[in-house]
Amino acid sequence: MKTVAVVGASLAGLSAARSLREQGYDGRLVLIGGEPHRPYDRPPLSKEFLAGEIDEDALALEAEGEDLAAVWELGVRAVGLDTGSWAEHHVRLADGRSVRAHGIVIATGAAARTLPGSERLDGVHVLRTLDDARALRADLARGGRLVVVGGGFIGAEVASTARRLGLDVTVVEAAPTPLAGPLGTEMGSLVSRLHADHGVRLLCGTGVRALAGTGRVEAVVLEDGRRLDADTVVVGVGARPCTDWLAGSGLDLDDGVRCDAAGRTNIPGIVAIGDCAAWYEPAVGAHRRVEHWTGARERPAAAVAALLSGGQGVPEAPRPPYFWSDQYGTRIQFAGYAAEADSVTVEEGVAADRSFLAVYRSAGRPVAVLGLNQTRLFTRWRRRLATAEARTAG
Image (cartoon, rainbow, N blue to C red; front, top):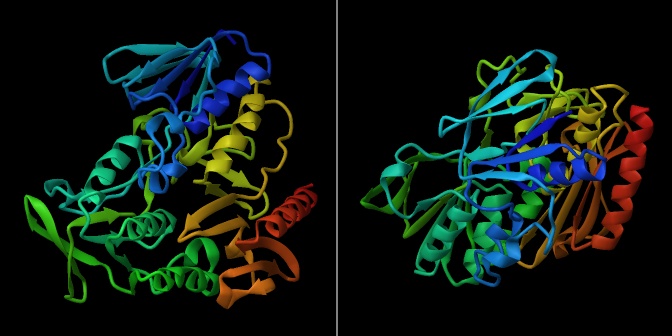
C-alpha cells in the first residue's frame, strides 16, 4: 500500500496512525485535520481544562519526541471523497487540493447539535472542541447564572464544573429521566440525583422553545412557558456524525459510516473509526456508533489490521463499549449494553450513598455493569463482561 490517508486528526486518527506504524506499514502516511491543532485529549475539556486547573499543553496526546514520519495537513477540511478502482481514492480538501491514497481511514468524528437561533447570541456554547472550551471557560469566569440544555454526560460534567466554580446552575432535560438512554431509566434517575445533592436544579420533561436576548443571551424560554434567566447557556443535546463530506462517495451511510465488526466499509481500502463510524456489534446484532474515548483508543488497531490485510480474515468481536464520567467528585463507570437488559440489581454498596455497583442482566446473563466510586470492583466486572461477550460472539 503506497499511501494511507487518515482523515481526522483526533484521538481515533492518531491511534490509527500509531497502529499503522506498529503493524509494519512503512509507506507514505498523511493525516488530515479540519482543526489547526495537533491531536488533543477531549475528556478534560468539560472538567479540568474548563475549571482552569490544567493548560493546553496538558491536553497533548503525542508523546514528547514522538515521530510517526507523517505528513500533517491541519486546518483544512476534507470536503469530498472520490473512490476509484484498485483501491485508489482521492480525498478532496477545502483549499482545492486533493490527496491520493490507496488506503483511507475515516475518523472525522461528530459535531455538536445546536439550538435554532443560538448562532445570533453571544454566551451560547456547545462543547466539542478545544476552541469551544476556550470560549466557554472565558464566559464561566464571568460567574452568574448558567443554564445547561441537555442532561447527558457532557452537560452534567459542565454543570458539575460550573457549580464548583461558584455559578448558579440549572440543567434542563427534555426527557422524563436524564441518562435513560445509556443507563436505563432506573439507574439514569439515580445517577442524575447527583445534581440535587450539590445544589444544581434539574428540570425534566420539558424542552426549550427559544433563547431570548439582544446580542447576548438573557434567558432560556421553556416549552411550558417558564423563563430561566441566564448569563451563559451550554447546549448539550447530542452530536451528529461528520459524514456530509462523504455524500456521493458510494459508502454506506446511515447515522455514520456503516462498517463490519472490524471497521471495514463496503468499499475496499476504506475503514472508519471513532464517533463517525457505525460498527456492527455482534453482541446486539446491529450497527452502533460508540462515541467514547476508549473506543477511539482501542478500535483503530482492529481497523488498521483489516486495512493492511486487504480485508481478509474474520474480525474479532469488539470489546463491549466502555465510558466513564466524573461529576461532583463521583467517578461513574459503565460498560456494556443497558438496552439489552431485562433487569438491573445493585450488588455492592448502597445506592443512596452514591457508591455502588449494579449489574444489568438479560435472561440471567450479565450484559452491562455500572459503578459509582467502585473502581476496583468495576474493573473486575468489566473483564468478566468482555470475556462473556467474546464467548457469545464465538
